[in-house]
Image 1 (cartoon, rainbow, N blue to C red):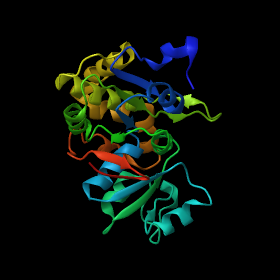
Image 2 (image 1 turned 90 degrees about the vertical axis):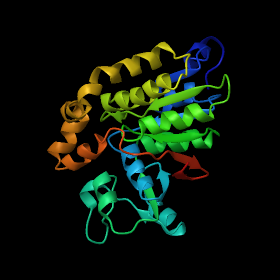
Image 3 (image 1 turned 180 degrees about the vertical axis):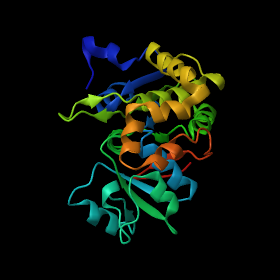
Length: 255
């Protein structure tokens, strides 16, 4: 809870706000009409690929002993870890596996970052959308068209985790957030905080070769070295998706 002298952390004097991870979501999310969650490698990219197929997606904080029961109760496929994919468990957080499976109506998608932030915001009563580079432009148009006069937008870059559990800002999430923020600017939305303006500027810097930047950043190199090059290729499908996944209740559906 941000109170008293720390109220400046909410960026509350600005209409469009940007911050990182669960603590940032707690700071800038409350009071915003719409909160965009960004996790380019790979939760929100996987989410948009599933949404392109019309699938309903249940974010789950992370895999634990309850995940299987949670999925079974909802008649959904449970995504496993990338290394656990098998003929009997063909879907994981990898967007490539979501695209390849023959049928997919409902999916439980655990993630330690984007999924966790989404659930945290939804439980606090926020209106949450999933944003990646694939759908940033569509999400910005949707948001600008539904934003009440004077209402605020918050953008949360999910980031990654260091081995000690602390937040590691992930530059691909900065670019994804920046793509969405740049889209808001182009839609005529004003009032960006300096933090939001910096994210938009970071995106503009890499926009001419965002694919190359994704492959060269730490997150992209990690996936390629693990044998998941196709996941980076899908994440780099800039502007390819027209869908806006909206978290309604406990699941994302196409808005």
